Image 1 (cartoon, rainbow, N blue to C red):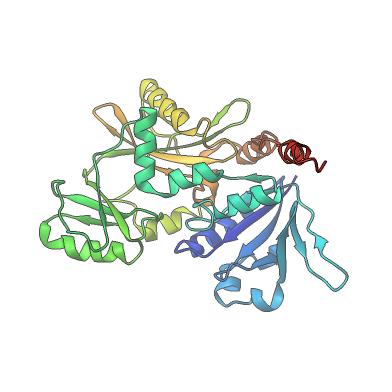
Image 2: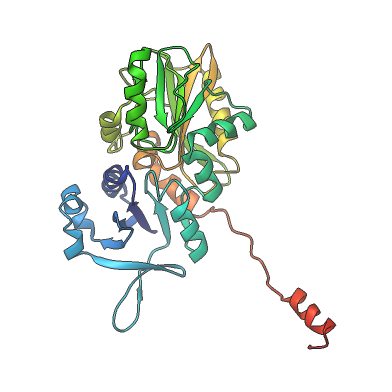
Length: 347
């Protein structure tokens, strides 16, 4: 199976996406990857496998050495004087973290142009990209979340949550712009940092030492769930730790938790996933407080696709690639217009 890994994008997480793509190049042994890079100007480039190195992008060598491609009906193509030459692949993998990839833009393009792809569909992207919408989704599905408030840029900075608290930009991942605030005197600075990245922030209580667990998976005729990981962290996973996290390609250790808790975490994951996220490999991060499971966040395009959580990641990719949701076909018959024409005697 030939898989087109689409990465980069106009996003604060652009570099993270590059790291993820380089990691998957090393992970795929049976599948044949090709690489489509989306630069900051949202131009597409076909990247040769041997050039999948971070410096190739940071130095902008791709502008001279890589072919610019276009997205057309059915896939990508290389323009030429003799007409566009279609790039041969079976399925695309959306690996753009943050804006462009997780907000629904590339999903909308793939749907519009009829490109088969692995990744969250438009509705799933919208609800998981915005942390407030994620809270509302979880509440609707009966999955617990921590209490929260939101603040908009320019609004009164009134906080009703007790310290310590954590501040997060509403539409950003990879812990960018996130701060732990331990007292009122630290609040303004933390808000200023967060508002550098977004016009709205989410504020939650920060619970030191809280148990956190990560689970990834898909539904492709059957549930294919990863092991559950208990991430090792200090206060929280900051940007630098998550940057390293995105380059992981070795399977991690399974969390030492009892079967009852495993089942609770898995059931919460299934409620979140089905049916909204069908067609995507996602990772959900959960908190556990007094044996109750709380959703922390949904990662609709997790770092390096959370390959390190699966026993056979390539088998998971192959399974979902052959079990994608299908958009309903609509037959346009022009019956309404024809009837109007007949009524006017113009048939």
